[in-house]
Image 1 (cartoon, rainbow, N blue to C red):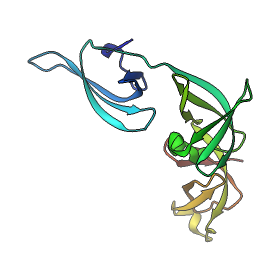
Image 2 (image 1 turned 90 degrees about the vertical axis):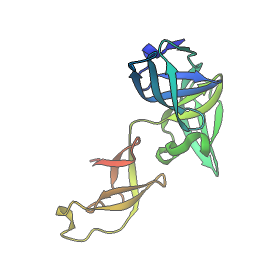
Image 3 (image 1 turned 180 degrees about the vertical axis):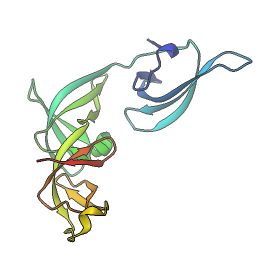
Image 4 (image 1 turned 120 degrees about the vertical axis):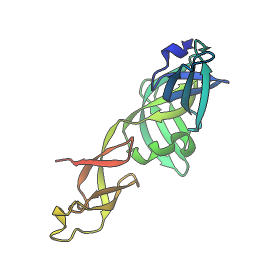
Length: 186
């Protein structure tokens, strides 16, 4: 059980049999009436964000979540396959279950697969990944000091904005939460 007093950003709770994560919360104590907690919660299954208000002191169920470290193997169309490192069983996940995470998956990468009541519902990729630039427009001499950016396609198919001096074949570090270029990897 989780009480409204225990609400924190990133805390997980269960509503109507579906797991949610708290994105934002605010304790409100009006002059008249009882206190309440205003929250923004995101479904771990569908990714939908909803606003929900709870009475102060209300207790909610904690979701039955389990994380397994698995290895990403390959993708076929809309299915992505992962292998359990202990049992060597393969687990397919759909593109919808992965959401934006699929942009950062590289073959043989170790990631955490999130299970709810024994069913896979999503993945947690590392905060930073190192990926190779497979295509970008050539930089023009003299453009390096202007601070501009250009789009670059990475080996996973994701497109990120990189500095103008970046060339094909270079490896860069990307923040998977925002999809932003961090630095060039030496």
